[in-house]
Image (tube, rainbow, N blue to C red):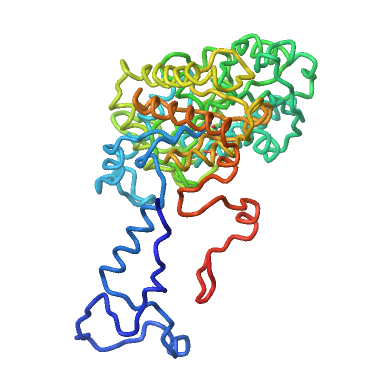
Length: 480
Ligand SMILES: *Cc1c(COP(=O)(O)O)cnc(C)c1O
């Protein structure tokens, strides 16, 4: 069992020293105003070097990561990211000042241009901006382009339709872009077809934002008919493509009638992104939206590359400089490692793995939406003697990061499992076996699950209190 490491403050003893510094051989020059200097020494812990090393090692071991174990967080694509990409992103040759003259950073500009070309080819869309710093930022950027397009057409509209199976960021982005949002209910199969769309399709509708595959992990099979109906109504189709790893190299959204979409480089194209960053959410558009793409834009010019900063019809800048350059480097490295012939295997393996987990757990858990799964599968806790939360907490005791829970909202006690393409059959078999054990425990001793986790350094938290009143500082004499 893991325990919390002893805090360095508790190990501190007067006079212990961890480092030896030489006497200064230069005159002392206070860098700050003497008025501002501390008059008394702070009560810093006094420790030996080995104690400090062990302290930080112990803290590091409390972290859970994709490098430490299986992490089937649905909708997040927490997959293994090849270390070669990290190495390339750290390459000294690529680090450049953002104001460097363009003739000195042609290689960096080429990286931007080449990723854009890859994305155009993979999505069938006419152009991309690599500027947005996350998926939600991409949604916002895309909706600003929709807005400007409709305004220039002299047909500004007020409403954006969003299915109840969409990702939660969609309504927020549409709202921030100035639209009213209307939720539309999915069919019993968990998708949006003409029957669901038609009653809402008024002249006020600027766009429909459709997550595809949706958050049930189901492909929106009526998307082409939906696109046609929207276009006939003068409305646009926004596709949330954060789940592109389910389609990569197999389906091109541009061929389905999508006008604008964002993709998440940090999910689909390998950047470690736990803990809130870094991300990158490029937005692709069909030809009619090209004039509105944000600046700056890199373009091929003869044998080299230059950058367009001014473009009167562009929506303008959405981010300083050129976007999250090192996430872009990782994405290009990932695509070049796979090569054109292997890109499609990302989707094939992601879908295969999700369906393997689905088949093996189908008999044990309720599956409310039975349409074919793509990259993730969503079970419900209906009929179980415990709640989804209890199962998630018990997974921690077995050293597995829980899947996404209670999302999407249309599934009771949702357990949203995304194994990703980078896990082996052996890892999935281990996970399935642990799930089997936990579900047996749930029947035999449900209280055990309600008390879980029992083997982790910290037991079950009051998550509301932890979020509202976080204790982020240790104070002498106070216990954690
Ligand atoms: C993750 C995700 C987003 C949001 O992306 P961020 O980079 O977290 O802003 C949007 N839609 C879907 C379907 C996602 O999975």
